[in-house]
Length: 201
Image (cartoon, rainbow, N blue to C red; front, top):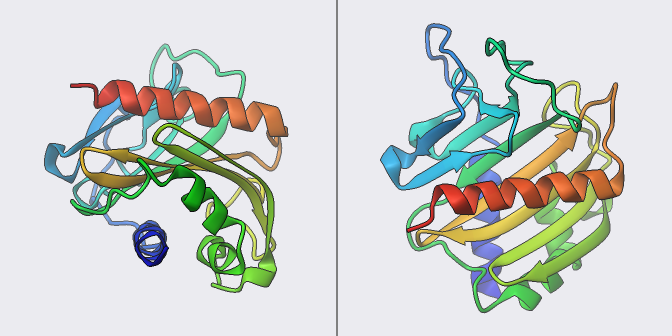
């Protein structure tokens, strides 16, 4: 259990870092590489990587609808959202073989504290957790608010192992068009599938 707590805490800390200033505007792309190519990142159909707000060399990417990011000819998506991906350091993989334990951790005060923006478990409401082969998911709301302006407070998050690293994938709908529970779950599952496809041997 201690290894699980450390791995998820590391992923949360990395995901909370401030964005980098790239000094210019780069066009969005449908696929990119994190950590110098250690992990590929891509979203479902209609989603692109926001190069300007991502920190690819540090393992962090933001994805949004390609049309929103200004990609010419992009089609509108039926479930607009902001997606974040954070890849941990090599050796942080902690999901495969420990799926039920990891999901159970998220249902404890320690797990809620790790999900909380402030570290206070009292701010987090765990709505649902789930687990399957190499995937743990959690649907929750943090009363501290959203880390991404303009997105809803409820979040769908998945933890998977990719290339020896713990990878955290999150999805939030927009405040003006929030995702319903099943729509958010479906989108998260599509993102996970796209990520696995991007890293298939």
